Image (cartoon, rainbow, N blue to C red; front, side, top):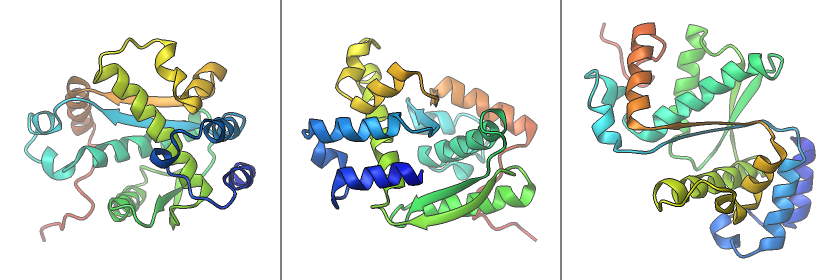
Length: 216
C-alpha cells in the first residue's frame, strides 16, 4: 500500500480526491485507476438493494436494534469477509481497519471491532485506526466504492443491461474486471438478507449492538 500511496500522491499533486468534483478529469481518473489496478491490493465490496425497513422488520424483534441502518449491516458483513479471506486468500495476513475521522459510523465500527475481538470471532482483524480523509488509502477506497455504486445503480435502478458498456464510463471498474483482479463483492437483496440473518441467528454469530448496555 505504501507504493500505491506514493504513486497516488504524485498523480494528485497535492490535491484531495473527490470523485464528484473530478468526474470530467478523464486523464487523471485513468491514471488513478491504473495505479490501483497494477497494485496487489485485494478489494471487498458489500451492498444492499431493496426496502431496508421492510426487510429488517420482518424477522426477529431485535433485528432493527442490532442493525438500525443498512450501513451497519454491510459494515459487519464486509469486515467478516476480510476475516474469512485473510485465511483463504492472504495467508492469514493481519488486517488493520482505518476509518475517516469524519465518518459518522467510525465510532460504531470501533465498538463493533472491540466486541468481536473480545469473543475471538475476528482473529485476523488486529487493529483499528482513524485517518485523515485525505489519506491516499481512504481516497483510493472512495474511488472504488463510488464507481461500484454507480455501476450497480445503472443496472438495478435504471434498468440497463449488465453488459461491458455499463463499466465503460468507470475506468477503475473497467480495469479491475478486465484484468480479473480479486474483487470480492456481496450484493444483498431482501430475500438474501433475511435468509442470512436467520441462519446467523441460529449459529449465534452476530452480536447485539456493541453499544447496547447489558442488563445486570
